[in-house]
Length: 478
Image (tube, rainbow, N blue to C red; front, top):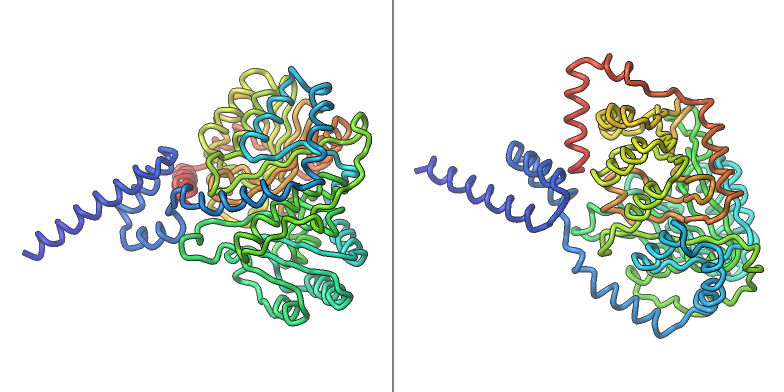
């Protein structure tokens, strides 16, 4: 009798698991990975799935999205919408009939990100330089400071920032801070609590049970709606000196000024509204800014994707960018666990004779994606793509450059979680001079890299290759 009961329970369990996984309409490889974990490791697999694997249908977010759209529709933002018509004419003159025009259209349709001018664009590859500049901008703030980070640590840097923010609050500047609950879970919150007591507003994002598998991976700073930052660096000392784990930390971050800052502000305001139901769609946070001359200004466009959206917008835009390349593609990401579509795009570009080069970390912070990446390399190398691993320290930069024509910098990694489950952004920059800067950074980084070769991969033993294949399977699920 007991045996029959156990058999029935197992049968029901298998049926329920299969129905749930099929209903979610995931990529088949991810579905298969979870199916194997749940069937062969049910004791571990069930809690793991519900905490890290469950895909709540994107329609559950429709109410929030509709509310945000209604607010935006009734409070037209002068700094954004007044620029649209001005830049529509310039965009047509510059890019109509080109692949850049297709990318612009894709981003507009997927994530409502419109191309806008920036008065200045600066790229930082040093955490010390970036944070010194950010702190100086915070010191100069007169109205508001909005900070959003995936990780907010408790260390030497956060002590400096906390002191400055406390002083700005005392001066009457409005300070809002948002951090990802899971990303910052291991770090003490006493400094943030002290800022709250001083008058700042502090909010943890994605704290609900059914959100624990997701991450707000954005890094955004907006000061007085005139200066904005985004890129790979979180709020922590290790992004300056590598911390206790690494000899150094190589990352890329972006500082912009001018009308485009409204796009970074838009993302912050949307997440803030989702958490606090506080409406910041007002002219104070979206002022009218004098625009540069359209014929000479730098055009930027923000693409944003989230588990709550219908499109995997960052991935789709990356796919088209790689497919549009005629001569060269340069990609930097700490990890390489692509889904099949992006994997195929790289293979197609390489086989077509495009000079495709990819750079990732050679000093891992996480073993699973590092080992999994090696299973993709043999076919990538055979297609003509060159792969480099940065060995001077931990490599965390996220960048894309195509044909010395346009580039993208932001928060997204080349992995399935960034493409499907995280809040991510990339800033596409349609400027040849800045694109050449990004390509030059890539060339400079090569001095600290080792190139991965087919001969090296062939020397991996069977056990190593089996371990890497298991990690590839696990990475699809986690």
